[in-house]
Image 1: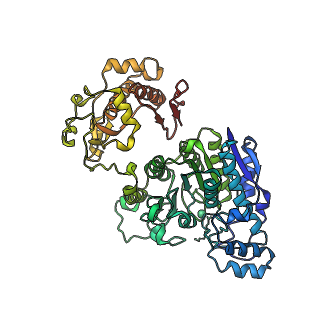
Image 2: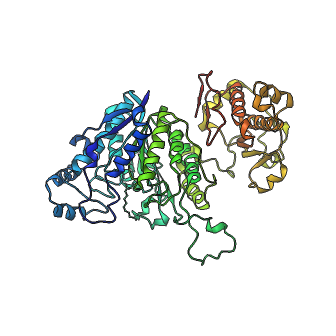
Image 3: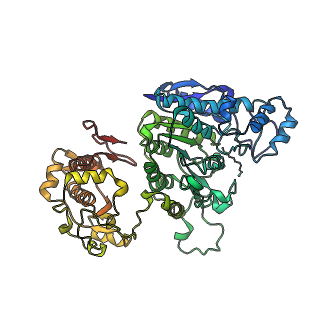
Amino acid sequence: MGTALVYHEDMTAARLLWDDPECEIECPERLTTALERLQQRGLEQRCLQLAAREASEAELGLVHSPEYVALVRGTQALGTGELQTLSGQYDAVYFHPSTFHCARLAVGAALQLVDAVLAGAVRNGLALVRPPGHHSQRAAANGFCVFNNVAIAARHAQRQHGLHRILIVDWDVHHGQGIQYIFEDDPSVLYFSWHRYEHGRFWPYLRESDADAVGQGPGLGFTVNLPWNQSPGPRGEDPAVLPGRASTDAPWPQVGMGNADYVAAFLHVLLPVAFEFNPELVLVSAGFDSAIGDPEGQMQATPECFAHLTQLLQVLAGGRVCAVLEGGYHLESLSQSVCMMVQALLGDPAPPLSGPMVPHGSALESIQSVRVAQAPHWMSLQQQGVAPVLSPSPYSPEGRPSSLLLTGRPEFKAAATQDVAALSSLLDQPRLNPTPPVRTAVALAAPDAALALPSDVLCEEGSAPQEETQAWARPHEALAQDRALTALGKVLYLLDRILDGQVSSGVAVTPACAAAATLDVAIRCGLSHGAQRLLCLAVGQLDRPPDLTDDGRLEGF
Ligand code: Q9C
Ligand code: ZN
């Protein structure tokens, strides 16, 4: 199954007819340049190309009021002066005589994409559209957006295809407040947005863009906002960690968010919640003004990052990912990012990410505040290091306090209760899995490095028995080397501790050339312990993909 690309050149017709520096960035070249680049790279030709159709007025009515639709329809007959006056009644909007036609094509493109994916004609796809949609509201245009393309597509997927759970991932650099308003009390649509916020000092300046806006009524917990608060500017260190600078020094060395911040947001906020939500369809409000070079976002993430984000989303909803273009105003950055996303949708491997893979302090602060705000609504966010163990795991029947475990030794190793059937039923019910006494263990080769670890992390010096480690390593040439073998022993030991419920997660270091082989062993070892389903996630580069070919239970990415 392939990838759809939905487009229509009529969507380049709308353009700004008067002088307005705020709106001029939303120009027809955004589409033509991105499309040209897709053609140049041979990507367009690899997609199923669909010509966009206009959405019907009934379809627009899934989200918008009849009066508002009539008002936009009326703009087709207006002169330039009247268009400018009407535009002035909205925030950051311009109308053109072709706007109604373009905006209906943009909605129609999103609907065709959803139809193609849900009919099984393609696995996933991208609709290249303008005007964008995520700021538009039931009866208002806003932020270059006229009709809410993605919101209408979600309602359409519910009404026409009977879907019950739809995830909307909005990685545009602006808050899609239009989408938030439309679904804020609706638990059938989970809306995730990250956005430049600067504590409310960035457009659209809304209190409800903050992390504590989590939805209302039955929709509590189904709005997930991740505000980026650090103002962008020249690349530098976090002010807080720069020695010798008083807080009165101006200007602060400032930073936009980068690859590490985006990946961290996915790993620590979006994916845990999304796995728990278990969507049937993923819609992406794919704005690329969150990429480096964009004049609006002023962020640092490179185009390759969008290949990784796209890959990460494909583990959800059986890979049914429908992306719809939103913002993105730096033509080169936009085009490259679009290519990266299409490559990932087509299944090509993602290029390595550049730059330091360490999130900014301010990003971690934002991530933590969303996790705190959302924790009441999502089990997957409730594993805090200090959380007491409510009921002892069947694999630590003694219910030992964690202080004892910090001096942990092999006596805690899987006990007589190692019962494969019980374990696999435990793995099948992650929501019932009680918090293990130790949240994260780190396997270290050099004990000194432990000094830098947070106090609630278990520093694990144990290893699996040598004969066991060697037996697992034997088929792999890459594991012959001493350092790789030692690392494997530690990985196997950690795995054992996780499977027996003593530890919830672990970190181990292995030589790069042994990473894929170590993963192979870890996967096989997990399966031999009775795991029914195993997710193997590689962020960054492996020397080769893990060998998953001969087992139907495996899905890797
Ligand atoms: N300097 C989209 O990206 N201008 N809309 C904000 C702040 C409005 C963005 C001014 C930006 C609208 C779809
Ligand atoms: Zn935007």
